[in-house]
Image 1 (cartoon, rainbow, N blue to C red):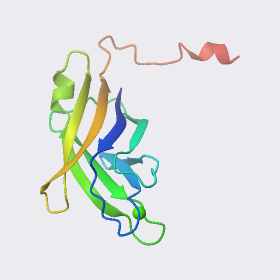
Image 2 (image 1 turned 30 degrees about the vertical axis):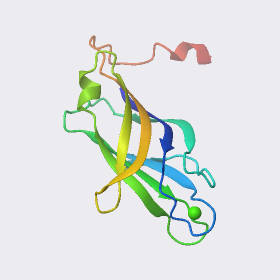
Image 3 (image 1 turned 180 degrees about the vertical axis):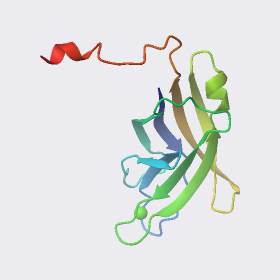
Image 4 (image 1 turned 120 degrees about the horizontal axis):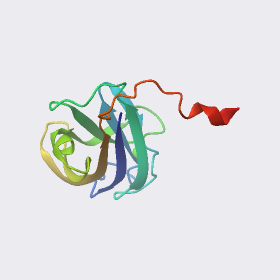
Length: 144
Ligand SMILES: [Ca+2]
């Protein structure tokens, strides 16, 4: 059982850099566990195409589950600065028959005001299997 999030790209990020352009990096937080994309240097429309997976440890998703998205400007010195953030509820993902959804999410700034920026995510949920063949071991034979 797992949740997969592919961070495809972001568009129209605000350029808060005084010289040159921002260096965006996206962070996805699910149940307190963080995953980060690469930093893309000097780009307002970064393309990451990176896939992350969270093992659900045998627990199915619940309807109040959500992921948090943060896009920050990477800084060589000092703290990275927030460009936009969003919360994405996973309810639709659970309801979807294919257990996969594609979403284009509007980012809000640190004061929760809408920005012109969007991030595109692809979500996939591997729900619990119906028949309970709980014990693994079936795939282990090939090692020897
Ligand atoms: Ca920077």
